[in-house]
Length: 85
Image (cartoon, rainbow, N blue to C red; front, side, top):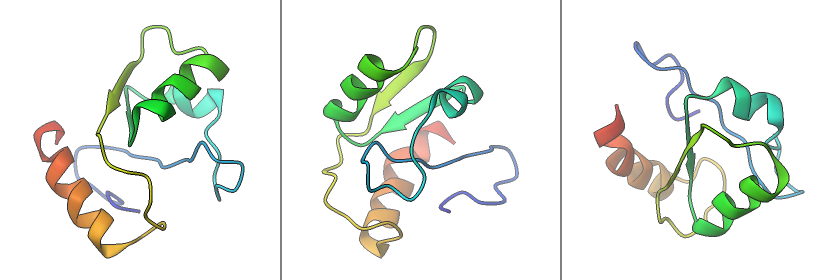
């Protein structure tokens, strides 16, 4: 995981696809203070399928065409999330 063992933040990863290794669920959303999604369609999907009231859903505007753990994606995520960490 990208931020495993981060000294200040706890992070979890889940996908919206039915093929996702770990699928997003209400319990994960309830646990999170901030929810980052790659595309606007992911945000809309979460809002349609789950209770997101009071949750900050942040769209990173990263095309969802990478495989999990892709080195290029990790670099993009580190750069994009830098302002939040």
